Amino acid sequence: MTQETTKALTVVQEMLAAFGKGDFEALKKTLSEDTVWVYHGVDGIPYNGTYNGRDGAVRFITNIVSYVDVLDFQVSKMVADQNTVIVLGSEKQKIKSNSEVLEQKWVQVYTVENNLITRLDEFANTAFALELFQK
Image (cartoon, rainbow, N blue to C red; front, side, top):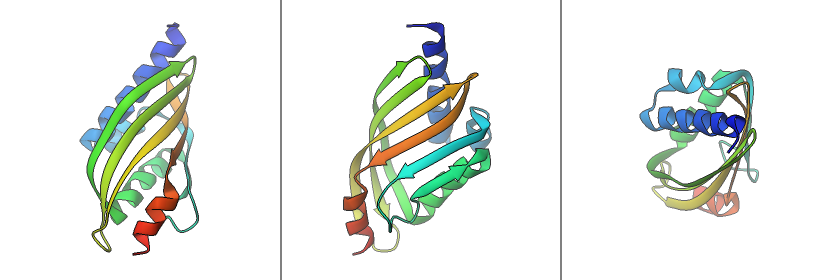
């Protein structure tokens, strides 16, 4: 593993640890000022979209938890190559508006430059999630 790959992996691990603790200040320290976070999903998912900057990344997370209670969040695998880190995981959430339970797997693709996360692209089964939000 190259030094660049090791550093990229470490930064993403630090960000995920801060996320798990709810430590947004520590999380923001792992992000570039102009970081871009994109949740790729179907129209109708309330937190779907693009979030810009450190505050935007925090807004993405707080937006999600305003709609769901996160019951479980697990990272199952991390794969890194140069400045790209791919994280595979799963989550279980309860939708606040109707108490439906969403269990799904997801993929997050991080880009790391100068030891800071510059981009996150997240993919999940948003069509299934939308069905549950609409119940």
